[in-house]
Length: 182
Image (cartoon, rainbow, N blue to C red; front, side):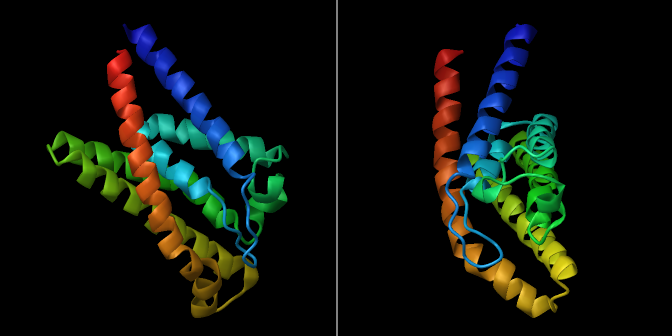
């Protein structure tokens, strides 16, 4: 039984890494911070995995990008991308999924309705991404706080909330599908 659970989590992590890579194919440049579908996948990772699994999944993805594989927005990779103006968003994937997954699991253990747990999880990802992305962008570009917020975060808040809604719907369907096959 344990081997089956380990296999399922390994397959789920692999599929989510692949989905995260594929999500970078859909990039719309909106200035220095592009629109991608990566946030939706990162939310999905936090919704479906434990904190440890989420950390490994995002860590492998970041490592793939760090060694130069074209897995970041606009099919780019390398340390320059990680250390550039949008690097804070990339690092937020690792930190945010661990925090968000932990919050979701804690709420689930308290018997909170699954939809509320999922919304709290998605909100954690968005807040973590916005804060780390904003701070990093401000530091790297030497922007003032308001300018950095207006460029790096403000254009994406509503879009990220829409991505969160889609991710929650997908996560509910995946959970239901996994229960049917168990």
